[in-house]
Length: 394
Image (cartoon, rainbow, N blue to C red; front, top):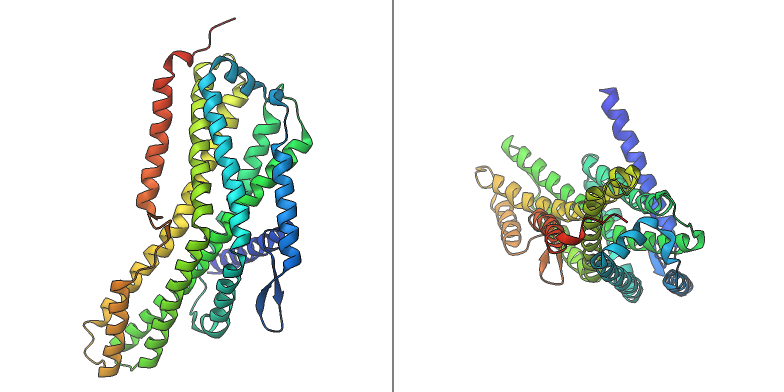
């Protein structure tokens, strides 16, 4: 018994470290223009931090767009010379990445006033209600937070490995610093959204735990407080509203980020096929390690973002399933039965889900479609460019 408890304590500590590192890192990078008032326990938007973030991030974007050394990557040079389609696709990916970066920063800062209201309401809910309602530690919350932090580190590490690891490449340090700090900033903004979603998941998970506890007590013949069910309904309603407002703030940024990962997977997959076909011309390090690890980490990042949203949605569905347990309770008083009926009707009309742009429900069903489409695009490119895949010997 001591070993699992020790593991859970370690995971809890790692999750807290990840959240704090994200907070402090966001302040340093100018991505979190809020200060915390410990006396009132609320966040305040700082104009100085807002100006600092805008100047810093736009400067880094401009520096990363300056004319660079095109021939620093030996593999890229040879592939571009012998296969013009790859160059065209990569230019399209760069345009998508640039649009994603600019829109992410501008929209995040422009909606910071709405964001601070949502975060303050979550802080109030945590302090006033959920800190008292939580019956046990949410291990899934800790695991997802740790995995998200790990993925961000791996994404940056993967990019650096490709930049510095390809043999016979010319290294431009300042260029790499600007480009990958900008990449880190986009990853951090998306991480903010996913952390907010996982917090909402934990609160809904807490409500489900309270409902299960009430159902168990009713089965034992004990009584429950109808006002407590009404309180849980009010909290659940507020969480759904906050989730909807949060998705409206981040929907364009997250959608563009997913499109960037999607397009990056296409170009990396296409280049990987070319390297495998011409394996005698390229280093085994490039063919077996560098590009495959980038593809795996990109897919993991894409899938993890979908998993966060699906977890919140599936937990909301469990609320409806738990409420069905009250149907066959014979010892419920009339007031308790009425409160349960109200909660059930509310859940039948409003569901917890993450919907971007009013069109895309982010869950596993959509995730599978994206992965399959990603693979099909690589297959289509390979079929279309089949005659140029094999390089002619000089």
